[in-house]
Length: 96
Image (cartoon, rainbow, N blue to C red; front, side):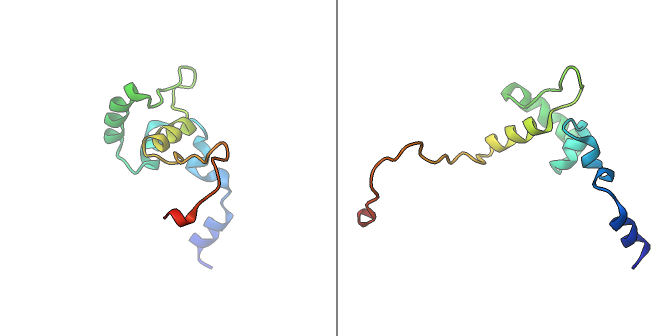
C-alpha cells in the first residue's frame, strides 16, 4: 500500500475540513461546497440575501449551513412535492 493510501486510511473524519467547519462554515467553505469561487459567492449572497438567503449570524459571524442548504433546496424546488394530507377519494385508473 502506498504512503498516500495509508495516510488516507488513517485519517479521522474530524480531519476533514468540512467536518471541522461544522454547522457554521466560513463563506469560502460555503463557496467551495457550492462549486463557486469566493467572489462569485459574495455577489450571489448579496443578491439573494434580500430574498431570504441566510445572513451571517451576529454571534458566530458565519452563516448557518443547514439554513443555506434549506434556502437553496426551496429555491430549486427540492422536496416541494408534498403528499396529500388526507385521502381524497378512490383512484380511478380507467379515467386515464
